[in-house]
Image 1 (tube, rainbow, N blue to C red):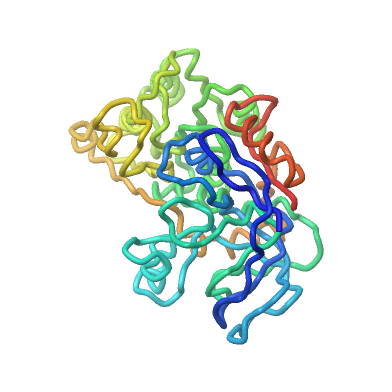
Image 2 (cartoon, rainbow, N blue to C red; image 1 turned 120 degrees about the vertical axis):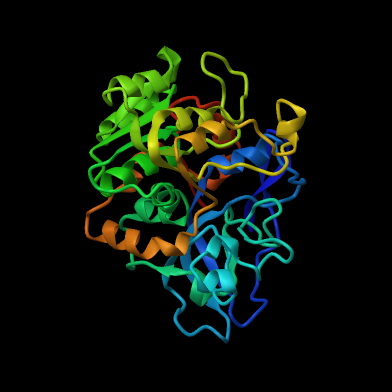
Length: 377
């Protein structure tokens, strides 16, 4: 089958790889109909992780079940399904408590597994024609048959739940103001989710004009940090107090204001300044324990200079960690079905799988309006 294979930094190729097969009675094989390129994939693509050549990318996947194992009870061939990017067993202590992003079974020695991602277990990705899904009764979310709302449902694999998770970590409540740093796909989903949760005003901080325009279109207030200190811009619109809550949808590859120089802690520190005393921060943006491309020795080992003193002084709460997709995806699916949510506004390009190499290059360079790419094998 055809699949997107990592070759070296800044290079992927669509190559022939072995088609997956049933290996356990609880497996299913899914024929992929849609799979997305994630900003997290770019960390590997850019050589900023320990990913080795040969890994098949792709943790945002949906499709049609083609084959089922003998132990499957809830699914059947022909079912249309979307899979959380988390690979989870459903029965370990973390899964039972709803923390499926930190499964203790699927990636021995580590809490958490994912498709097609370095250090996240032996699970090939779904930027391919077919995908093996383990513990499938637990991991597959069934969708209405047909092909309607394909791109909306596609986003249930990761970025819609992850954006919502950022708001959950920050405990966003109706009537509150929220600052979202980062206007990429997850940031836009966080802003959208804050509005769905009833926030009165949501600010989106970025400098990419297409992203800021998307934020405006959904009813958020765009803040261009290239035009001045975002903290001051937000304070001017919140009576000098700051917002009630904040979401970091950028992570460790943040850049300092007015430059292209990486400053990994700049968003965290800006949020500490932006959010009012006794507010809360949600951090779904990715931070890693090791970054080969870090701008200094501390950053290379995942240690950042964060304003912990000011965070403590202001009595701020902070929640971190990757999304436990299954905690949200069924509810978000039903909102899509009922017309209450249309997350596909964030998708800029839908392309055939054989254009993956070009799509990665353009998405990484943020050119030609590339904000979110969905591939169709």
